[in-house]
Length: 632
Image (tube, rainbow, N blue to C red; front, side, top):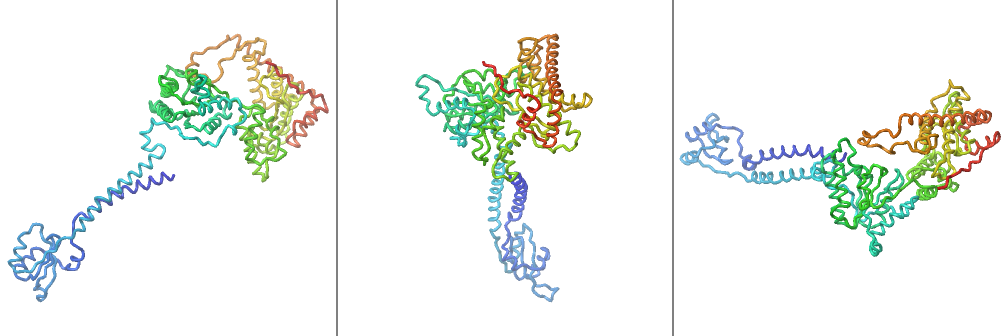
């Protein structure tokens, strides 16, 4: 807004300067008589030039004073109409009257000539010098400010220049000690830093510095944070740019920016180049219809050439980050370009604990808060999720005017991060009771099925789109999931619909199980088509994973016949129906404890997992949740 106001002021000032310049020129370009001499002798009465000649011929003129280069005269003459009194009269003389001086001499009239003042010439010279200087300065100031603004006119000549941010010694404030939970990736990248600081350790045994390191992992796992740590540790020139900044709507701009970036990097070698979200420019070539030769492909071709082309880039290490390695061009992934691919995955329980310890340094945490318990409660959370979790807990603490973060704020923050903001509790008795039976249905099936994850809590407090929630938390990290565990999860997801059918009848079932049914269908289809956990046998019938390119999608065809597709649908239906029947059986056999839990849930609105397990154990035997993890 500040730049915009300056431009408006200048746009209004320039026309005023131009108009003022011409007015100045018109006012002072003509030399005039000095104001003191002319004003002191100016007559109030004017006389025509013809009458002046008549007076001169009749001898009535006694003296004449000439001004303004002979264009004006002040005449003293005897006026017969005023009793022959002497009058001072002003006469405008013609431009060409050389005979006037002769007539004055012949008539023996005293005359004097007053030369014009030079003030006009001085002002004219100043006008010719000062105003052009002011005008040029204003234009220069306007264009200079426009050049510094995004999209200004000066940017037209710098389209082909790299937009990479350059730091001679990147002081990011991030070191390897500030990065936790991804020890394997840190170890790989610490070698890169050692390559830059002490290359002789590796070159002595014939090792070459890797040209590129590709960081691959889900969003929020710390890829950009690792790049900042490398920049902070290495102490070498550091270039950082996003993949989208290479591509423009103008042809050839992206390739030009790549060339300019590597030119600057060669001048400052050894150095680091960090390209964030490289999939914006490095997607597979020839994926469009007709194999289009678009601007992005030209940019990628130039990047491939610069990384490992005819000319070497000694001392330049490229670090790139992406969460879509499956769409990158194969030429970009080969050795010699990105020699190493470092997987930056979601942290395990140990990594989550380390990440929580890092982010808890600058927060006031109550002594009773267990970071280990939080780490166990948050499987699948990325580093960014954990940072957001503690930040949300700190915000809730400040909102509640507490001095330190307690487990209550942690629990509420976990719920908010996973399920959304807390809504207004239900007041309608019928709807609230129906939702309570639905959620207790999930909880009772999850509790009584051996291979299901244990229940953490059941709540009727709405969050996001859900009117109620049942939380399950695994006891341990699971890299592999058995068939029995998948079947248990399908039965648990069917518990809500089964409770509605058994308690209220088929005519009173609601749309609340829509999300549960989608989850069940997806798990059952994966069991049949991907994991080979059906009567079809141990075969994979699924297509290629990930996003399919338009060009590849046009030529793809089904990998199985229509008969197999029909059998897949039958198997998915059987698996879902088996889970549904198991859930209905558990609901029928435990109606008494379900009614008690529903009344307690309506009263308290939230039941803890341990309390629920204790109440259920009073009515029936609760299976031990020791889990079988297949050995590889």
